Image (cartoon, rainbow, N blue to C red; front, side, top):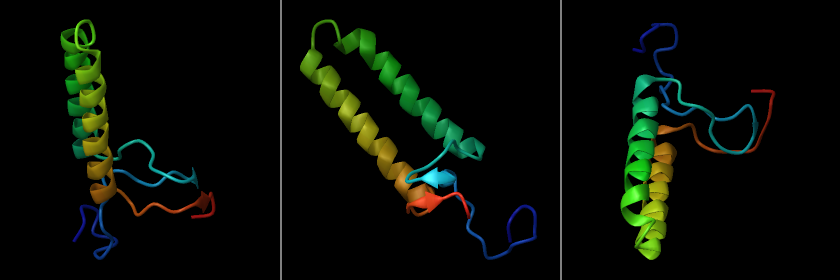
Length: 87
C-alpha cells in the first residue's frame, strides 16, 4: 500500500516524467533530492581538485558521475516516453 492508501498498486517513482516532451522532471520525494544533492556535492568537490591541473580526469569524473545519475534516474523514475501534456 502507498502512503496515501488510495492507489495500492501504483509504484512510487522518485523522478516523475515531464508533462511535455521526453525525460524526467524534478524529484517528488526526499530520496530523489538526496540523489541530486550527492551528485552535485561530488561534482562541485571534484571541480577545484581536478579542473586546475587534471582536465582529463575532471572530464572523466564528470562523465562518470552523470552516467551514474542517469542510471539511478532510469531505475527509480517513471518509464520515459514522449508526452504531450495529456497524462
